[in-house]
Amino acid sequence: MYNAAVSAEQVAVPPAPLLSVVMPIYNEQEALPLTVQRLRPILDELGITYEVVGIDDGSTDATPAIMQKIHQDWPEFRIVRFARNSGHQAALTAGIHRAYGDYVVSIDADLQDPPEKIPEMLALAREKNLDIVYGVRGDRGTDTFFKRRTAGAYYWLMRKLVGKNMPNQAGDFRLLSRAAVDALKAMPEHQPVYRLLVPWLGFPSGEVVYVREERVAGSTHYPLSKMVRLAIDSITNFSASPLRLATWLGLLSFVLCFCLGIYTTVEYALGKTVPGWSSLFVGMLFLGAVQLVCIGLLGEYVGRIYSAAQARPAYFVGYDSAEDNSAKTAKVSEYAV
Image 1 (tube, rainbow, N blue to C red):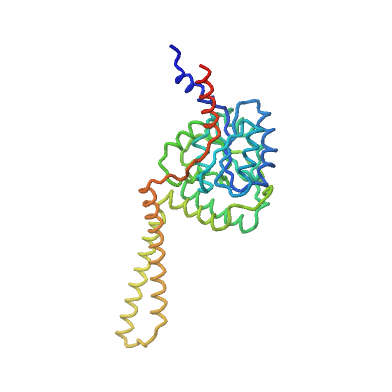
Image 2 (image 1 turned 180 degrees about the horizontal axis):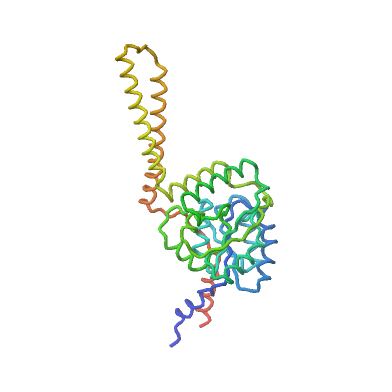
């Protein structure tokens, strides 16, 4: 007897494309059409099966309507929409976890990372059997002096934590093999920072160098506050070094106070003590600052333990066009029987 349910399930599973392009999108009504106009011919010319997974991170402008129009005109463009804004890294996580491709490329929708490098990444990965290909920014001349200096400090610090496996000036523009994606999905990170996690895997990797361009339209979604937040998340999620720093600060303050106590005792024995508040005031300020720094560092880690214990999901997917299309296909197949 013909089993309609089994047939529907089989039809509902889409064939895995060779390439998935994951694109976090938030309030990009001006940039997104320009990005699609530049990206689609590049992918079509590859002559392979592909999908573009656009992650709508709770956009509040006309971006959702634009994405729906693009999906109608471009079947390979897939929409994954969050129920609310959850952040760039959460959008990246959803895209990586939901991508079907044998290779997954992540790229932003502002065209600062050139999509023309995607074929080069894919060719390098297939030719040398690499699991990771990083897009490395060889020139950041379009960034401000402050942005270049802070970014340089960030990558220097991250390389100290992760090691030399982390390429310098490598952001979230990268290619991952299915093996690397599966490894990332298996990791129990509550707030993943892929700039550190991906190099930590230690999988065979290569680099593609490019010139970072200016934003094609709109304004940046990574102001100074988010850059600082990313740095804090990177450090506290990946290393316990700040806790050891707090310990060393405590030991330093103890040594200084001990020396100051000996000096005070000697001065008192020699009868040279005079009433004053300067040394006391400075000492209290120093001890208070050290204590606050240590408490703040402990608070960062306790906060992450609390978040992990709550086990709340980092995002909620309200809509996925691939699942919607699969359900429609399954329903048609069932009725056809």
